[in-house]
Length: 618
Image (cartoon, rainbow, N blue to C red):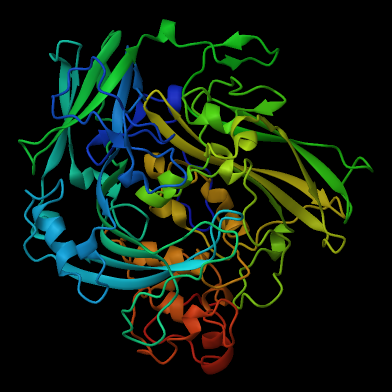
């Protein structure tokens, strides 16, 4: 017996009990960086008249300084976290980060004793029990260039874990609302740390880390020397960066019914979060409380009339009609019109123009987020890129085992950002202050195969404490009227990801129905950067919450063929030393032969399936 929550295969879109204003409560996101409250638009929270201790910093890192390392550039904070009064919230993200960069004693890549000493005795978390902290991984990551700003480089990332504080059970966070006088109003609510679905580094969340950035790869196994990237003529200097970080990121409440009411408050106040493992060191977030009646009418209705914005996010695309009125032809140019709304149907932007980068980083974009390069580089939090992609046909959407081969479907080798990445950087003033057109033009290749294609739009928003990402698909026909479907090769995500933890609420906010379109954005022409074969396995195989036998491939793989692409990287998700250093140099060559992703299946393992694994029968 099955229902829409437990059906096998792709699964239907499941009921989401917490979807913005249509739900019982609003998801609250709280983040701290080096002692200061920080919003996802890069603004650092100013103390102002909020009832926070005098120890709250008067200077905070500048995430809007493009030419300097933000942690080395301290400026008076000017941002304010706004929380809506008379509203029910639940804590969905609690992130605290402490980072130091380019400390001289942390630059010895062959001896990491000093970074570990800083973590244990000097960081914001020095009073946790760091006994038994040990190194758990030492990985090299490819960092692709940002055109016009950086060059291709590598980063060596060493992760530490297993400290005794990580093994504590039953600890949690108490959330309290403070009015302007510092008095607790309403009833405090407590969340257990175990109630958050993820805090693993593989999923991009918590990490205890030393990292060396902007370098060339090692020359031989065990090479710990620092190899700087070459200075390019006409480019700014790009010396190596040494970053030591403790980032604790607890995301995804598994108990969203544990809510708290923000009273009818107006003006300055604060939110205080006390961790039971640091009972004498609460975290303060200065806020401005805004009654619903005083939320500015920054949105518009369908007629273009000003209206008050609501919570949530619903990005849409309207596609121009094909020339023949039925389906597009190969080589035809199509227009896609962006229309981003809240969950009450209010448009978040001008019908013809999107907000400028300046508006996005100064709280004037109705919460719409754009890429913040300093935020990405400093907090290592990557889910903030708005994008529009087209790809297809659906039935050809299988990943490339060998990235040097032609993709079986049409799609970009990198994502097409809806707004250029430098838009939030103040230096190129033309891009920084321009408003971006809502019309996106794409031309289908002349070799486009017939079938159903998908246009994907992804957007991100932070509004009145609610942080959300959403990715919606819109389908169109090329070369024929008959519809085609995804290969139906992977699925079953809804077995674990359902209700509030459905894929709609995690990461990019993509429904389980369209999980195979993940490869549209994560299908690159090299085998180094964020390919789904790598990160999907690593996230699940490293998670202590993964409920199934890690050798049973049938949970996610619906066809035998989809599981017969063994690779060094995929296998390393569980077996990091399967071949020791035999293929050491291969993994540092982005298009080398044999490919990291192709050599296992196409060379040695042509007729031999991975031992100890359960594969689909057909």
